Image (cartoon, rainbow, N blue to C red; front, top):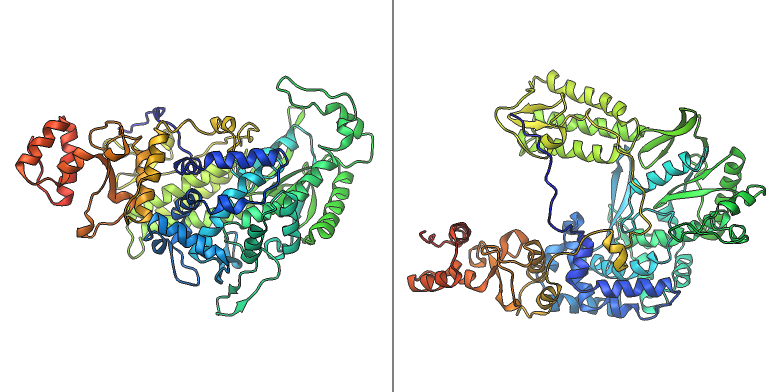
Amino acid sequence: MITTNKRKKSTKPKKINNLRHAEYYDMQDTFDGLFAQAMDGGTFDRLMDSILSRDNILLAYRNIKGNNGSVTPGTDRLTIQDVEKFTPDGLVQKVRNITKNYSPRAVRRKEIPKPHDPSKTRPLGIPCIWDRLIQQCILQVLEPVCEAKFCETSYGFRPNRSQEHAVAAAYRLMQKSHMGFVVEFDIKGFFDNVDHSKLMKQMWALGIRDKRLLYIIKRVLQAPIQLEDGTMVTPDKGTPQGGIISPLLANIVLNELDWWIESQWQDNPVVWSGKPCYDAKGGPIKSNGYKAMRATRLKEMYMVRYADDFRVFCPTADVAFRAKTAVTQWLKERLRLDISPEKTRVVSLENQYSEFLGIKMKLRQKKGKMVVHSRVGDKAIQRIRAEAKQKVRAIVRPQKGNTDIHAIHDYNAFVMGVHNYYRMATAVIVDFAEIGYRAWKIFYRLGKRLKKSPRGEVTGAVVERYGESAQMRYLKNLPIAPIAYTRTKPPMNKKRSVQKYTPEGRKEIHKNLGINLSMLGALVRQPLYGRSAEYADNRLSLYCAQYGKCAVTGQVFEISEDIHCHHKLPRSKGGNDKYQNLILVHETVHILIHATTESTIEKYLALTNLNKKQLAKLNKLRVEVGNLPIAT
């Protein structure tokens, strides 16, 4: 029997990682203050004080240690494991010492295949781990300043914005705003051609006036690059692809373009020339101004940008071609960037598909009006098809060091991932039906017989999501997610009210952590006498994960001194400070875990008064450290 019960709605508070981390280290108020000051047009000449604050450095460590790239060495061969050995105070002092006369180490260049065309590569820069940590410190403080200045039309590498929001904006312009033409722009080698002096001026114009910070950023941009053959080169332009701060710098460069295009129509002075009108929510009504502007030769154009990939939507071919010429010229004269003539074109959306972020879209008539019709992009289909075949073959013929069970889990995760993204295409079912047919053929061609129903009860995310599909199959009683079974889900628009750097905006993102934040602050400030930064940080993560409660008794910690961080496998027996090896318990419970004398055990059992379930948890921890379980 297959269980297909709907998932119960969780009553636990939602947790958004970056917000949680800022709250761990009490930096959220600082970031909010920077955002508010930038919104008021303020300037900033002492940002390095915030960047090199103890809490910001520890927050930076927390944010990068979970990145996949943190275990990738730079030219100095160091990884996050070399950083986490420092004590928190030692880590803070090391970062401050490095920035005194900052000179970043060489960036390791690695050529990686492009996902849509493995025959071509793109350069990836891998900074050394200490340089990555410093870039993260800078990013955390610069982001709220820049967010206050960035335009609503950009969606790439910004908090609470995504590719889904960008695609939704494109759909809206096509269908609701009746934009029948789009200009597909391609900036030639954008990340390799950013002008350093222009970028410095743009940062100054945004109010970033801290000369020491600007000096450090310039040193980051000019860091030597070690090519794969060992050759050293020093860049005089461009931002290193792979650097933590590079996406933010790219947005700063193109922010000027965003506002210039906005000023051509949506924020043109003519819009505000008449009597101002406002809707029920207090937003400006621009329809009267737009009506007057359409009688002129002004260019009606709207932009949607994701990093350096952007589209300009227009109502007519004439406006689209004029917009193409104007934007190309503006980029050349103002940002010193060239457009690729072969890849930049005007597309009639009624006659052709236009591809954006892996989705190809056009307009078609339905019930007397033009609506969006979209498919999975051609390059994306090729990539998904090839990867699906590869993962199916891994199930049928596992590679050395792997098992078919692991391969099934890997395949299922892949299927759910591509479904989650590409389901915003209105005709996604057509594309995945063809992909599924080809993938399923491999199973049968290579002799794997899949069953239509399992033996006994099977639960889990795959069954929960696809259990009602007739295409569900099982192998070794494990579900195989049907790649052909998916449904369209319209992309969600970005809510204007959502803002990471205001208390009101954060309410739209997540609920309160549901824990004692003053206790969390006490833990941050508690001296640890030589413990590692990894231990200190994981202790905070565990406090939030356990909702401020003892893992054995479930009782809320009242004072920080009651919180004991226990190593499941003791360090004397090879245990480490990894998150998985730690657990927070009350002081009396910690004594019981390690107690060996009968009198001590009896004394603390009487104090804790554990029930049967709690005693079982205690005994499990005792066995892990090598002690006998306490008899019930």
